[in-house]
Image (cartoon, rainbow, N blue to C red; front, side, top):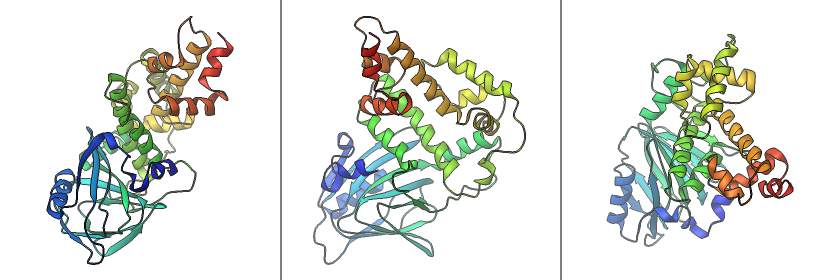
Length: 332
C-alpha cells in the first residue's frame, strides 16, 4: 500500500482523472460529499481554520471508489443509512469512526469496515486523507448467495476493524489494481478488467474479512466431484480470450458457487477466478514464445486482457522468473 501514499502530499493525484470537486466552502463540501456518499452533518474544528477539501471518485456498477481530504480537522455526525458498506483507509493522518457504542481509531495500518446502518459519526485529523470504497449491500448479498448456494437469512455483519498486514498482500491490494485500471482509460478491454475486479473485491472481502458468514464460506468436508472443476476448466480454456463473470462459471459448473470454490481450492489450490487469470498468463507466455515478426509485448498482453502493463510485467516476472520482454527477445 505504500505506493498509494507516495503520489504527492495529500494524495490529490490519486484518481486525479476522476475529480469531483475542490472547495473551501463548508456547505458546498457537505453537499458534494452527501451526493456521493450519504447525507450528514459536517463541522470544522475551532483551531484548524478553513477547509481545503477535495474529492476524487468513480462509481462503477457494484462498487464506488474514491480518495478525499478536508484539509482541516472535521467532525461528521447524523449519517443517514444508504444501504451500503464503507471501507475507509487513511493514507495520511488518522480518523476516529463511531459505530454506535463502539469507536475505532484508524490510520495507515488499520482500516474500518462500516455499514451505514451502524455508522453515526466520524472525526478526521487536519492532515488526514483517505481512500474510501463503497459496496452496495445488494451486491454483497448477491455474491454471498452465489458462494453459499442460498440467500442470506440475516444481514451480513463484518468485523469493523481490518488490519493492514505489513508487506503481505491484503484486500486493499485488489483496490490498488482497480485504481490502476481506472487510470488507464475507458476502452472495452479496460471495462472488462474493471468488471472482473469489482467481483474480485466483493468475493475477497467475503472470504477474508471476519463476518457472521465467515464459517460458511470456508472449504467444506464434503467431497466435490472433480468433473465440476474440469467442466469449468474446459469452459475457461475455450473462452479465455473474452470476459468471463463468476456467475457464468457457476452456471457452467452445475453446482453452487460455494461447491465450485471448494472444488477449485481442493483440487487446484486457488479460486476459479485466480485460475482464469493464471491461464491467461500461460496464454501470454505461449504467444511470446511463438511471436510472429512485429508482435510486441503490449499487443500480446492486450490480446489476453492485460492492460496495466507495468503491473502485468511485474506479475509475469513473479510467475515465470523473467520479464515478458525477455521472453519475447530470447525466442525471437
